[in-house]
Image 1: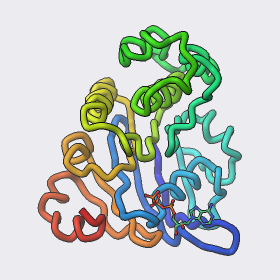
Image 2 (image 1 turned 45 degrees about the horizontal axis):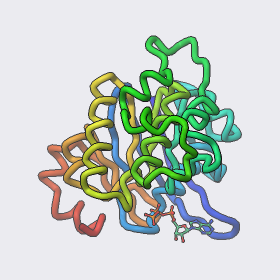
Image 3 (image 1 turned 180 degrees about the horizontal axis):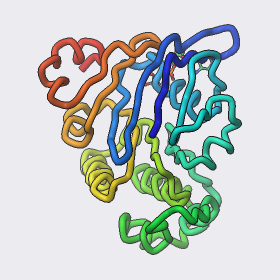
Length: 233
Ligand SMILES: Nc1ncnc2c1ncn2[C@@H]1O[C@H](COP(=O)(O)OP(=O)(O)OP(=O)(O)O)[C@@H](O)[C@H]1O
């Protein structure tokens, strides 16, 4: 579904990604792991066309997407939950959700307000409140709900549980497990290895802008010392 090969990207004169390789198959949950500053967010930005790739290629559902503008990538069906949530603070919860809703005929069971509210009952309770009055965890749920409303073939989450209380994190992990059970493909950047080990099918480790390791959960267990050294946990 998503295939990233030899990806290079950067900011101005600074090259940050040198050789990123990763793949997400239909219905798969894949992680992108690595210490701070190794290029995880830049990889996501390059996939989305926010930082246009300078080398390598990104294919999505069999078509080249590197070179497309961000709205073109999003339209192909990649939904991003960016680092730092970035909900519209002055819009209500309901408005945030409908503002990005996309009519995708291809979705067999399209996301609706009712479905998002069933997934996150807290959002239903706060439907009329402006997003800025929500807690960090609720804003994160809203950011996920907003991405789902575009009916993405692939959902990308950048540090979705960072800075959240353990109980809220657990809630988000179980929501992602429920999405996976429905067949949603997900690429996750996070540092909570234990939760990721349970949830993900495969893992990818970045070190200084290069993919240095990738493998299944069982392979990660076998290689856990090496992987833990890379990701610093
Ligand atoms: N806007 C920017 N301009 C210049 N350099 C940047 C910019 N954003 C990030 N970088 C640099 O790119 C490198 C990779 O950053 P990136 O945010 O991709 O890392 P990361 O693995 O996502 O880390 P984190 O977990 O801290 O978000 C870092 O050295 C960072 O300083």
